[in-house]
Image: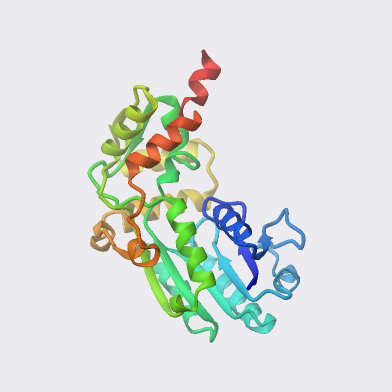
Amino acid sequence: MSNNILVIGGTGKTGRKVVQLLVALQQNVRIGSRKASPVFDWQDPSGWAKALEGIEKMYVTFQPDLAVPGALDAIEALTHQARKSGVKKIVLLSGKGEKEAELCEQLVMHSGIDYTIVRASWFNQNFSESFFLDPILAGHVALPKAEAKVPYVDTDDIAEVVVEALLNANHNGKIYELTGPRLLTFPEVVSEISKASGREITFTPISMQAYTSMLKEAGLPEDYVWLINYLFTEVLDAAGNKQISGDIEKVLGRKPKDFTEYAGETAATGVWNARVETLG
């Protein structure tokens, strides 16, 4: 049976993979983005009713993260509109160990709509599709909290869990914490990428203050600088973030993708050699 499903952030890191999987399963998918028709824009709630018209279920990702100021008001307004529009199920992407994000979760959980909360650890893809890519291409990665251990999770795994949660009522009312199978420090991650790409990439530990200044100088938007500062100072060292969860295996019946596998697949695309080739 096909459902009418809205994927908010349907062109993003997890959203586009959720769309691909749902289309392959012959579901009726509507992408929620500013470039889609009907338009979905977090900054313009006047178009939300149109975007939610006829929608039964939805996957919600908030950019850049549920922890940023303004997210709570936006999620509250969206759940209110979802109720009015007759949406029956919400799957919300949240962040593991983020107290501010958990306030947004509570709004969805108490909305009266069936829900599944997907709390993800840091993505593998942050190193190939996000703010860590440029320093890797430059061959010099400088980050604070060098010894912090993170159970990086792959967006392929997140997307599969989301689709399972959207299509199967057994996941209603559940909170899943998604992690990879092991903990890695930043120097270990850089070493893995260096090995997979066949490039020399150095890692230098720096202070939080120096890193924040670097981000501002690079011209990153204020909310991204705030978020990265928050993630490094509040989330990275939290005890709960160092725990490896078995939820991917519980939902999908298989182990999560390891960082080494991700690094091999990503290196094969050539994305980590892009700048080397253009300079050559």
